[in-house]
Image (cartoon, rainbow, N blue to C red):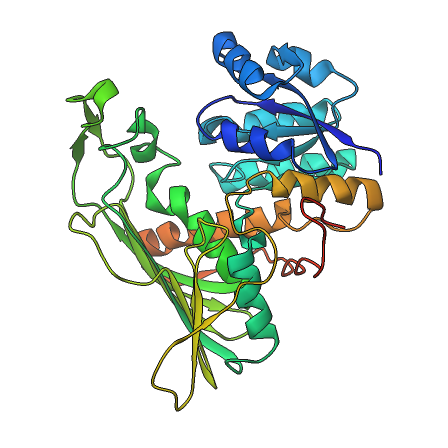
Amino acid sequence: MKKVKVGVIGCGKISSIYMENCQKFEILDLAACADMDPARAAEQAAAYGIPNVYTVEQLLADPEIEIVINLTIPAAHAEISLRALEAGKHVYVEKPLAVTREEGRKVLEAARAKGLLVGSAPETFLGAGIQTALKMIEDGVIGRPVAATSFMMSRGHEFWHPDPEFYYAAGGGPMFDMGPYYLTALVQLLGPIRTVAGITGKALAERTITSEKKAGKKIPVDIPTHVAGTLQFSSGAIATLIMSFDVFGGSDLPPIEIYGTEGSLQVPDPNTFGGTVKYRRTGESEWREQPLLPGYDQNTRGIGPADMAYAIRTGRPHRASGELAYHVLEAMWAFHDSSDSQRFYEMESSCGRPSPLPPGLAPYTLD
């Protein structure tokens, strides 16, 4: 199968793992990178043997590049994705798909008008951990799923991240930072979301950076840093979810648990590809660990663009799709809208559950 040439726009911290893994998947040819800081692009190109260091304009003008991997900051996601689509490129974007629902819709509409594909992180649901949990649900190990819990309890990022300001600005916060992982995993396991009820708040109006680069700098908190609520899925299952940057003393709550009519299932951290899957059936007193399916149990960011590349070549659907990412984007905003209005939010979008990865694949192949 002919390789698909890809170019990366945005050579910041997250780009390293994408660049490393893009060179492992047999379908991908990492041909170029670009960044608003040319020195940073050159440094990444040298580190990963990327042949072309471009400006953004040059990368979009290269007729051989079929997929643009958009790793810019969230505020630039929609702009760069729309420019890439206008240039005739398929786009795979880091989470979230866009900052606002309006921007997200524009990206999907532009792709449909051009006959191009849009994909978006997170792709962690393609890892062995969540794929194993999915198979157990589909095999009926816990019966019919009726409820779930999902928790991301954190103190925020200003104590370790070199540039944490954007986490507390519009488009940031725990929901937009980590919510995509948890909500995407829940949609993979339980199907699309129908209704959301949320309450939001924030513990601090200002935070002080303690990481070395900007230690002592004070930054305003412009977004909610604690988001709590419930979701009802089209399947009827109900989930409780908390996303927080206001947990300063730590927490032992599990990332995700699914409760069925015949048992319960513990799902690994959806920000990882591996982890431990445990289950306990009705009448049992101890949790049992389920061996992971063969597959991707290490950090395999880049599997989303690779899956998209196979879709381009074969015409099949890609799994980390723009429709899935938009559904999750709407759900994230739904928590905030519900809190502001003190009303339930009825979802307008829907999506299909991504198909499981086929068993028995050779490493770094997806078809």
